[in-house]
Amino acid sequence: MKIKSIVLALTLSVLAIAGIAAANTGLQNTPYSTNNFSATFNGPVTADAPTRNRDNNSTDYRYNSAVGGTYQSITVRFIDYPIPADLTSSDFYADHDGDGGTITDRSTSTYQGHSLTYARRRYTFDGKEYAKRTRYIIVSQREVIFITQIVPFEDFTAPGAGVGDQPQWFEFEDSLSIK
Image (tube, rainbow, N blue to C red; front, side, top):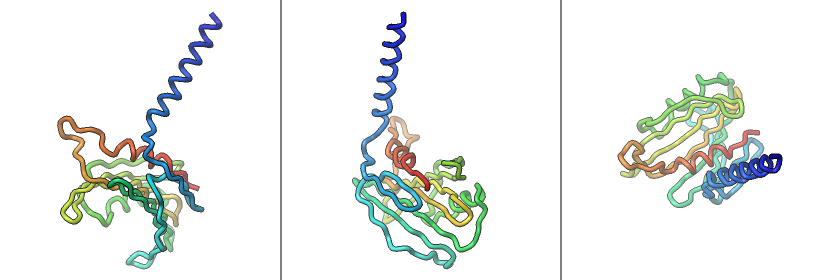
């Protein structure tokens, strides 16, 4: 009886490990780290020069990767004045996203103890439709992180529709570690 229990426990452990490996798409293959975060992108990462916003009250540090029609970015924004470190601020950023478009999915939650608003938008750029997934994460009263993935739009509500970029998005967003 004791041997059966050990064999059963070993079998369940192997199946659990195989399930975890199967869930990984393997599309995220470039670890990247800064003083503010670490994450695994889908390819080589380019760090843009810091930019001030048009109201001159915050500075963005953007890190980008683009492979096979999938664009991924993480923006770390430092704000010159304190903002509420809660959902009111993450909702504000989701509501005022500069790309516009129509929100097709939205939710609120926390990530590593920080408030976030998630939005998936459908928008048109240069005559082509895109889907933009973003988590607007409020790290502190003066720091915000936006993690974004943009792909050609796919209607998941259509009959026979697949899951599109969702597995890659889950892998990318879950790789983010806020420091």
